[in-house]
Image (cartoon, rainbow, N blue to C red; front, side):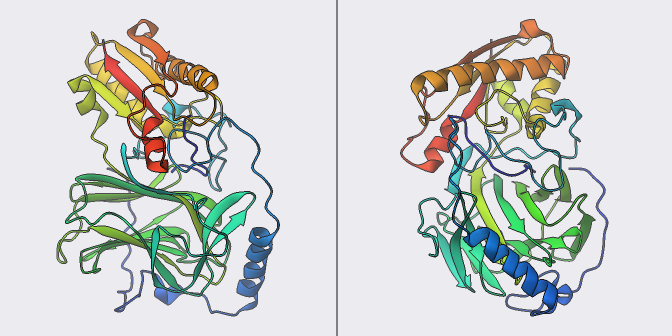
Amino acid sequence: MSRRRPAAVLWTGCIVLALLASATAGHAGLGDALKKKVGDKATQKAGEAVDKAVDKPATPAPATTAPASGEAGAAKPAATGQPAAGAGDKVSTVSTKFDFVPGDSVIFLDDFTQDDLGEFPARWRLTQGNFEVAEMDGERWLRGVSEDGWVQLKLPVMTALPEFWTPEFDIWTVEPNSNAFTVRGLNKDSEWIWEASFPLNQDLAFRTGSIRSATPFEGNVAGRHHMMFMGRGTAVKAYVDRQRLASVPEVSDANGAAVKFDIRFWASTKPMITNVRFAEGCRPAKDMLAEGKLVTHGILFASGSDVVLPESAPVLRQVSAYLVANPAVKLKITGHTDNVGTPASNLDLSKRRAAAVAGVLTEQFGIAADRFTADGKGDTRAVASNAKPEGRAMNRRVEFVKL
């Protein structure tokens, strides 16, 4: 079954440079000087609202043929700051500045459904503070319950990150929330190489070495959003929803190479994350198509339907550009699912989604319909074990093969 990624998905572009105060040693972050006073009435009121929302009895998630996992390739409710899926947005009209494509080899995946409520999650490492697994409207989250805290993903030990890599996750926060989340790339000695904070007032702030940037986010910073990072060699980009908010062609090498990540929760209003995904890849689509086959996890659909979501634009733009540059090429598009749901429903949905992808390329990107053949294989062509979330994530995919 095609995977479900709740929340909004989200190297050129205008970055508004701003000199930010240098962080102090230890756990200092980009916006420490802007931290709101702990204990003020607004903070207390917001914290009480979070407790009420999160700690109320959980409402079971509605039945659906899509699995409740947290990755690309499936459905997601609307996030604050961008239109809901199906609100009329066309894939072809998404800004070319939004070029995030999720990696295709999943290394880490966690939506906290395997952890007990109130406990610290098993696949994470605590560095500082206090955290717990919470539930809101039938969905699991990792919630920071102390003023300040750091956690790390328990990734395999690496001497360096892959050449291409993509960490991403959903966030949820309420005002006051300035500097609620800081994500850092760390070397083997846990020294930071780069870091990004959101929201820093209305901005996403990024720094590496002497480079500083603060780029405004268009929309309400409170609520639910999707944060994404994409590494390509020495370059790093950062996104929130469909907005690219940092693009650094070369991060500092003063402390060596990043080999892991950590996340800081810094707000009294109990910010939360969920649907955490870290993957290797992916190579540019044009390179894989030139070799004859593109396997992608970057085409997203509305839950249980064949509606292609706007966040699929980066992949489909690349496929379209390749076909325009190579007018003799024809493609077979094949949809694949994991084994969640019945084989019959998986097969039917995979076929409809492959046809929908062909339809978008024809109707929105102007590629002739006779250059595509669409098919679906359901859950019959697994490329990884369905016994683990990471394997199911890799099985939910769309493939393009040159005919």
